[in-house]
Image 1 (cartoon, rainbow, N blue to C red):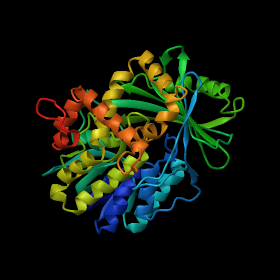
Image 2 (spheres, rainbow, N blue to C red; image 1 turned 120 degrees about the vertical axis):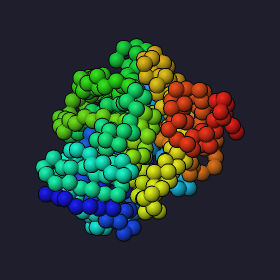
Image 3 (cartoon, rainbow, N blue to C red; image 1 turned 30 degrees about the horizontal axis):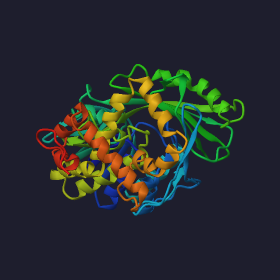
Image 4 (cartoon, rainbow, N blue to C red; image 1 turned 135 degrees about the vertical axis):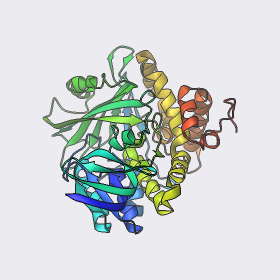
Length: 433
């Protein structure tokens, strides 16, 4: 039983929460790191840590044993055509990603946070404790309570902290759902598959097949569900059929044994969730930082955890403002465009198919591959000068112009005081620069 007061309570020990706790503890804060699960524990994920996440691990001095280095990714369109997206070094990130099971990855980050001085607590947050600034802690389901000057919500897409601090506009959240399994068959290249079960009826998401350690592969389906959460079961039902499709594409032989099926919700595009207020800072999935176009969330989770910790260490009284500004500068322009595009495309299966077919056309796909890789993976900032960066920057500007009057852009402009500067949106919705 715990009944103590801390400088910071971090709820959730995934990549976002453990990174926040690690930076806070190293900065001298007294931190409680709360999670309802005993570690190591698993999570539904493609198990890929992107280049920005790899750089963050290096910055933090955290080593993840047994991680595989992966580079280029192959995208397969609805007609079976393939395009290789290069993973090239940037000015601020390396030219590779890592493949590592979440059970191992999350445990490594949590161990680093505990070694730095964070107090690990296994328990479930139950009732919020009010304080002068809003949320001041939680009682625990098994008894006891943890109080803190600041609460960091790192408890995933369905965050208890976000609800308790009243930071979610449920009408605007963009949801997704992913189902993952492991196959007893090796894969040496990450594959993304745009899939049509019927001609010109594209899946509102994609399938994947990623390398994994120990001679196995990570396979899964991710679908966007926009504002409702009933169609997530579609991915679960379709996974066996997708395995058959992967066999037809020659990605796997027959139907290898699958195990470890696990599903989870994603909250994407920053829209619908205010990242800070009422005594709480939200990081990772709790803040809706999953990339709406390709589902990556680990690098964003770690980056937001570090940003939240640095904002608190600079002074808890103004941490919310500093943290919102940090997120706006790092992610707002991209997510405003990507979330608006997702909201338009996903309800239109023919449009999803058209995009998947167009970007994998012979010649065009190869021409766009470098810029597509940078834009899709949110790597334009920090990319070296050259044709790929120029193409990605052009796509960013075009996307911003096309989505500047969208409901998504309007919501984000209201939620982030920095939106006008970051999005370059004037009072009448005109784009500056």
